Length: 341
Image 1 (tube, helix red, strand yellow):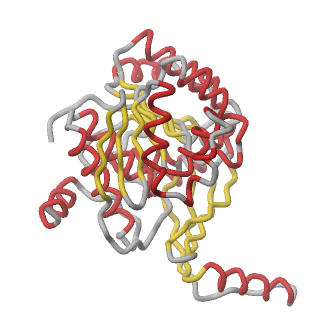
Image 2 (cartoon, rainbow, N blue to C red):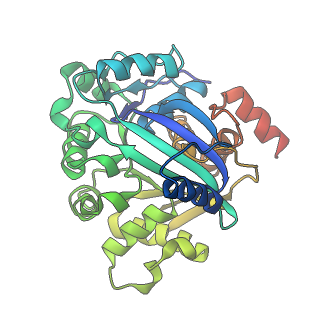
């Protein structure tokens, strides 16, 4: 792996508690039965405590790939202690702020209607209020030197549009870094979508916008609220690529779309599509973060589009097929790709 400057990843860290079960309906029925009897203990599930948050997961996956990122997040002293125990000791934690609150998520992973889904119940903690003013001069200096600045998990942030606008405006004026954004699922914070589109994307502040089919639906409907094509987009896989191409054409940004069927990159009227790898999923939460890490790695290594998407798909496939939610090394990714060529 060539030596590259450290990309900056921000701003969230969550403690993730995975609850892994079989069928979702059976799980809900069990909870309902316990509630009706006044409480009790539901057994038969598997539990994992892991590092979480889009930024920490993406940074962890990048580190496994041989890229040393700079992680800028806000938590409390307990959170920093937990983070040190949950990530590779080589991950740079010198830019972790401890003047905030712990963020935590319970991720319920189960089978539903023929696919593996994850349902997250979160306490946003400091992620909800992280702002550009939280960045110290040492953070800003790392950002100025970075080849890429990734802003993730905006769906938890009440001030997401101003954070994105202020951060990426600074990047545009003071560095040559690629700006990378993934807003996450905005269904719990829908008011951020329109100002992100109008004040950040249309302002030309984002180079790469990473999304899944759900997030593509949100942005496409914001751009064209009366266009029936984007209604219930998740249920129409045949329209997913069309949505990515439409968004890219409307806001002049590279759209990197990741789905369980395929990945695609759309920009300037052209798109490249690469099918996903067929693997058995043992975990779902964090799959998009693993994919983003592969996408970021391929971007800063200047891989061509097809190679970059294939790398991202392989990183995600190896992660979701890992029973312990472990990010793959670059050696494991290359071996996987060799066996699937």
